[in-house]
Amino acid sequence: MSYGPLYDINHSGDGGIYGQLLRNNGLQGSKPGLTAWAAVGDATIAVDAQNPLTEAIPHSLKLDVKQGASGAVGFTNEGYWGVPVDGSEFLNTFWIKGNFSGDITVRLVGNNTGTEYGSTKISQSSNSSNFTKVLAKIPTKKAPDGAVLYELTVDGASVGGSSLNFGLFELFPQTYKSRLHIPGSGTLDGHELTDPVREQAKPGDGSGMKRSVPWKTVPDAKATGHTTTQTGWDMGLTPVLGVWAGFALESGGNTPITGDALKPYIDDVLNELEEPWKLTMVEIGNEDMLGGGCESYVERFTAFSDAIHAAYPDLTIIASTDQSSCLPSKLPEGAWVDYHNYNTADNLVKQFSQFDNKDRSVPYFIGEYSCQQDNAWPFMQGSVAEAVYMIGIERNSDVVKMAAYAPLLQLVNSTQWTPNLIAFTQNPSTVIETTSYYVQQMFSVNRGDTIHNVTSDSAFGPVYWVASSADDKYYVKLANYGADTQEITVTISGKTGGKLTVLADSDPKAFNSDTQTLVTPSESDMKATNGKFTFTLPAWSVGVLAAH
Image 1 (cartoon, rainbow, N blue to C red):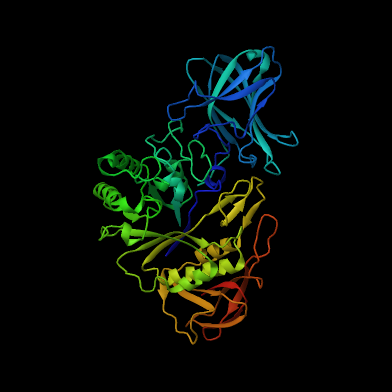
Image 2 (cartoon, helix red, strand yellow):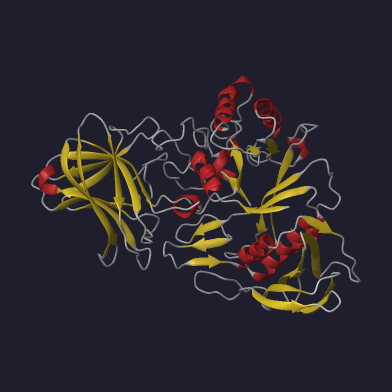
């Protein structure tokens, strides 16, 4: 069984794992505004619909310079509550329109200190007829925190009494090359017909990409399904590509779309699946059992599935729900179903055996799961419950093919959903590894390819376990969902030693956050006598024995 993450909200993509650092860089959304932008010097800025960059990006940033202006004039962008500067060479692109000839200065400057962490000067000319693309490289020095602004200025005296338009800013630091489930959840559906991630633009500079508005955030230009899939490949992951299937949440914008009206959307998907990716899995829609999508999903799923399978017969197709009332009476051969499970700690433990008696002919992808019970941060009891649930699905990995904890990332400054696996700010030193993160990490790095039967003198509960192996290494994963310590003996024939990793806290409510780190794993070397390992599993704990 493959472990992996899903990300889609809390600025986990824009402002998070996607490297572009400027917020509101395309001035998009249903009500575009100046969020993150501010004027510099004797000038004002405004969103301009009269000078669109492209049809897909119908607004630009207008800089009006006052008559008789002097000194530097322009604007700043605060990024996602700051711009992290890591000392690498940054790449900056933008578009300019208007009668101009002179130097453009771009700086990365401390918001509170005025310290300059990077700058470059670009000799540039432009005209009032067309947008001109500008590319600049910015050498930087590392900033101690994320309190940095992006600043673009020109000499006010040279442009006094005139205006310039700018569009589609991008700022990237140096970037570097399990499963990644994208685009995630509501990002894929959208709330209205105009919202979903549906793009006909080819790979390029992003100027032809419209954007959706999920989870009350405005995704920035270019961080689209295309770019996100490429991000997955660059990270060495195997993306599960979700495609829009004619339905917006709560049946928004005259959806669901059915019949012949689906054809252009199906054509979009078929075009999207061509080079440059060698995809293996495509999911049709997202949570189509909700908001009025179920009644039409049989028709919509079948239309997309038939077309995709005819063109790409080797792709695994995943239905967006496991609810039989929303699915064809017989799924296409090889198709999977997607099951989402957000639950309380006690209920996750009760679902330990959920997949023991499932029909083995229909594989499952658990596309979203985590412990949810009014907790702002993952906490010890909830993380142990997740481990119990994960042990249960790993025991059934013949039918549960993949599972993705959700949501993955959270920008602390702007959060729509809690809890999340990893939280961060733009201060490079502030990355919060939660108790649930450590459980995921422990299970993922100790991954077998063969599940073994275990003979035990005790029933499951409060201790739960699963055993696997890969080559000559054996892995035993355990969870103690209770307030008492447990003495554990594991016998693995022929094994003499290993490593035990334990995550534990006697307080079931203990959690890590942006203000405290209370729980981290401990490791210890283990010796076996005649293949027998003996150790103590603390209260509220997760343990992994890797034996060799």
